[in-house]
Structures are given as C-alpha cells and as structure tokens.
Length: 470
Image (cartoon, rainbow, N blue to C red; front, side, top):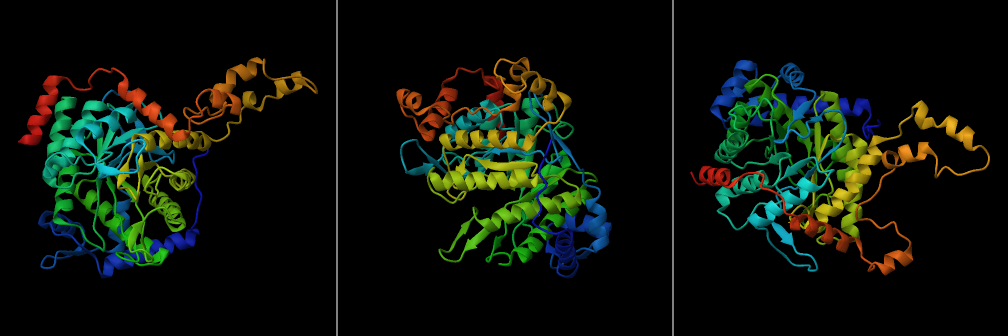
C-alpha cells in the first residue's frame, strides 16, 4: 500500500524549522497560566518564571519528551466494530467540525444550526462507510451556550457508535462529557480503550489560556488522546512568511507535547495542522489557498520526523455555497492531506471557511474521500495481480470480460461511486437529469428516513441529560 509521503521541505529545511522552534522556546518560552503545570514543568527541568507564568525549555528536555509520545494511537468505537490505528500514514476521515450555521437544500440562506440537526449529521456520518470518526458537525445554537458542547456530544452518543471527536471549551465541559462517556460505556476507565478523543487549542502567539490548561489536566487524567490544534493566522497572529508561520505553529505543538508527557509519561497526542492566512485584500481569514496546501505537507513532514501521528483540516473551502469553487477547493485540500500521509483529516461537510454546513456537503465530501481512499490504497503487485497467465491465455485476440480473474477482482480493484454520474447521457436524461447536489440530498434524506434503533435507550438518555444539567 502506498500511504503518501510527498515532501515540500528538504530534510535540511525541516531541521532548520525544528531548530528555530527550539530556539524560540528556550529564549522566549510560552505563557502557561496554571500553577500545577508550571510546577511539574519546573521539576522536569524547564525554566519557570512563576510571576509571569512563563516557561522556557532547554532543547534537550523537549527532544527527550518528544520521544516519549506514542508513535501510534488506537481509537476505539463503542460497538467495537473497528479499531482505528492512526500513525501509519493512512488517512482517516472525520465529519465536522464545530460550525455555527446550517444551509438548507435549495436555498442560499444560512441559519443557526440546531441540536436536532447536529444529531442528524451524526446519523448520516454513522451510515457513511468511509467516515471513520464522527465529530461535532456544529455547535447547536438552540441550547444554553455554556453547555452547547455537552449537548452536541450527547447527540453524537445518541446517533453513532463510531469513535467521536469533540472540542471541549472548558474544564467543566470536558468533565461533563467524560461523565457521559462513562455512563454509556459502563466503565470509569475511558482511557484504556478510548471511544472519544479531543481537540485542544493553544492561543497565538505563544500562549495557553487558563481554560485550555484545565482541559489538558482533565483529559490527561482520564487518559484520553488529544489533538494539539493551534490555528495561528499567517500575517496576523503569526509571521506572514510560511517558514516563520511554521516555526510559531511548531512551538505551540511542541509545548503541547511537553505538557502532556510531563503530566503523564506516554500520553497519546497528535500533531495538528489548521493553517489559516489573513486575507490582506479583504481583511478576513482564509483556509483554501495554495499556501495552506503547502503548509499541510510541511506539517505532516515535521510530524513524521517527530514520530507522532498527524492531523489536518481538509475538505476546506472559502466558498459560501456548495458550488464549483467549493468542490475543487475541497478536492485539492483533501488530496494534499492524502498525498502528505496525514493520519486524521477533519472538516467533511464544512464550507464558508468552516462556518457553514449542509447534509449534501457531507455526502459529497464522503464521495470524494472514498475515491481518494482508493487512490491512497495504491497498486497491488502480486503474481495474481500481474495476471501473466490470463494475458497469455487471451493472447492476441479475445476479451477479458468473462474471465474468472476479472470476476474475482473487478470489485476490489476498481472504485465505484455512490452518487457520481457514470451513465451515458441518454440514461442520465431518462432518469431525471439529476445533478450532484440533488443526488447528495436524496442520499442524506434516505439515511435520515431509515428506521434505526436508538444507540442509547430512553433511560440512558435521561441520565445524559441529568449529567449536563448538573
């Protein structure tokens, strides 16, 4: 299997970015407003200024702690239908993440996403074969906002048994969701076979907030894997040069690795890429640019050099509707992730720079990713696949259509789409001349119309609601 390893940095350039990151962390350090974390960092060998809450790190300490982070991570589902091992360069897809708005089919208007719709997205993602992990598609706007992430997590637990990914915004949110996980799994040990993992985001430039520090404490205590997800904006909150942006981004990743390993030796972490540019022409952030494609490749390359799994936003577009721009930007950014050997790719179903979602967009992104997954599988070369015997049998004249070799391999060797059109014009016309958006809409509505049993029963649902309220 070819898993992708395209490079945009020479080995020497990647090393220079690493060395520059170490220099920044040794000289300037990072702001960590949490006494317990600072104490443990100090005991580990960091130079801590308690008064200003600044930690500076010797290069040898950072490099030693990087080696303690696991090279691969096993992510579990509640049904145990599949264990996902990340860290091998095989890209896994995640629905979501954390949009604010919903766009209905046939309109161009966006509106606040609801709790019910977050659950609907989870139901659709649960039934789409090539979505491996179900994320929070949107933050529901019709619930108390201080509990919105917990309500979203509840809708995921109600509608999918796949591994779920969340982004708690406070320590209280994290503990609430972990209590819910313990209820649905019937176990207080949610770290040994984690059915949940978390995004945790440092702030730019060079700082962690009190809230993120508290989240890390709770996540590490439970043994739950977490994705270190800085999102510096080149030209605004990080240097405008791509190399300088990579240095600042990398320093934030490294501090997350260090904190995790100091708190718990061997805690699983993931190197994330959520690169954003500040649009100097319009004054807004953008994520689907040639520069962000390059940064995805570079981030994956640096993660490999550290020996830890990688993550990236993908299927990214700055288009505000599901149109031609939306599709080609998504396809390019997803292809970059696959080519780079990114382990986990999020943002299926998202558009409008991550603010908007639609059911149709999720189904279309799944179709694109299923094609890319076949591409990443590569070309299998065995005696049977070389087909010398059948070539000699057919010789200079004949057909392979009825050969047993063809019947045995055509399903596994070729990609067959679900909603894409591969029919002749006449048949497509006879069947209603459906475009891609219409086909995706019908696919999504078909899934939502299915009568499936509840993932959690009514008693457990009431228990989850009680946990959130308390």
